[in-house]
Image (cartoon, rainbow, N blue to C red; front, side):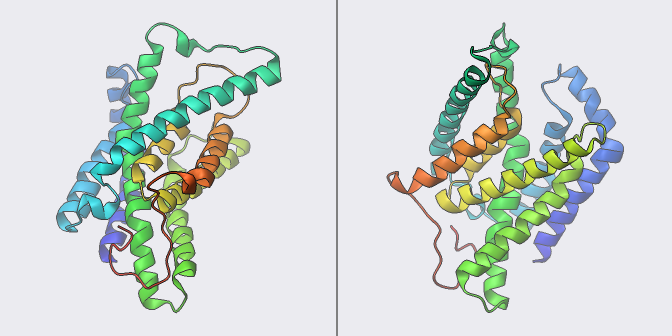
Length: 272
């Protein structure tokens, strides 16, 4: 439990340093890279090195598989991400056609922009998305569940719900200050918070339903960095959320599915 508290405090501290001090040199790095390596991507490299590798793997002696990072799950995670991305493009094209009567293609179709968009998506996936999913879904949910099973006299299902709620509240509190609220506009503030809440709920469901953290990483990356080939006023996050909910609904029908259903008390890392 002490390691969990240290991990969360260090993450919170790095976020505060980013907002107060680190933002300026990281902005310079973004300018040098032509906008490819954004400040949050650079900050996530630091977090992966000091928190994921240093604290969790080295000091905490966790193995990657104990965080949900099974190598065998990478192909399924990549495949699910590609399918969600393709279906999202289709959904946005249909939404644009229904609202405007024609498909309006965006500037992402010009020149090398599709390659640039794919590069940004990949960088975001292997940095911020991977870090957040590893810590707040792969580590925090099962560890809190284990602790609750030991000390709170509820059944495993109730404790799982409590573990998800507590872990994602922590995630929301730590992540919200990093979001650009649009010059303090209350509408942007509310929509940004709701976006973080929706993502945390969806990815918790994906993780618990599939036991494949890489699918959650892909959804996280698409949530914030998807490059659309069409322009429409329909919010892409709503379309992605609908697609993910559909994916969760049909997942039991897929072959070799892995669901997390609890009936007995857990031991450490028993999610895996």
